[in-house]
Length: 339
Image (cartoon, rainbow, N blue to C red; front, side, top):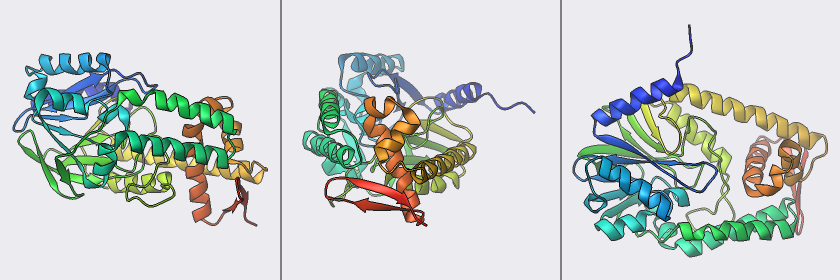
């Protein structure tokens, strides 16, 4: 029996969503992930999920699609943030300036969104500290921080007027959606569930074409240290896999109609990478950056924090399983397998 065509299945899912008054809005971004999918939901309140980064090109793309759906940006009554990343929240303030819309987001992320510049600086410094501790040359880490800081103009503070707790219902487009907290890709990932329609807005929690990178971040509760992003992400994926989702509208790529199968593939791929990283440590690659370099070569420098987040996530699993130990030196940390 032939495998379902994911593109065709996505087109059918998006057609069904349009019948429900849900318009997919592909907004251009300057990032490698390319376009972000925002969603306009007809009804009361007229709702926009995510808004893209803050740039003229992104604004033109967003406004054109809103107009094509028969509305104006000024008509938006509610904007909902799926998570804290700049490609999703950067332009929310622009929409609010045009429309006076209210902004909804999970309560945990409210201070982080309001203190966008300070929070971004804190995240960038965490990245530098971790890169240096785990083997990236300090000069490279500081150059990468400058590159990241140059993108900060694509964002702006977001002032949430409708915070909600996980498990609460949120009215979007005349329907009630249950909110679920699914940390991993970011510490604020939130999904929105319409049980009757078996429809989920998933943000970047699960993507059709690539595995969402569980980026290491600062905890949202204000505690010191870092998130154990991959461990959190795997737990979140397992929770979502147990839900009867028929259509997941994601933050990038195609609509997903086989979420449980896709999650099984993602988890299996993570398991394989965990074993690969264990073997590399056993062979003597004690530095996480050294492990990343063994897997990705030059990409481990040009995209050092992405690759390091990946490696550290798998090392977190190996440490939790007692298969690897971390030796925390004064400035550098190394890893080795247990007996």
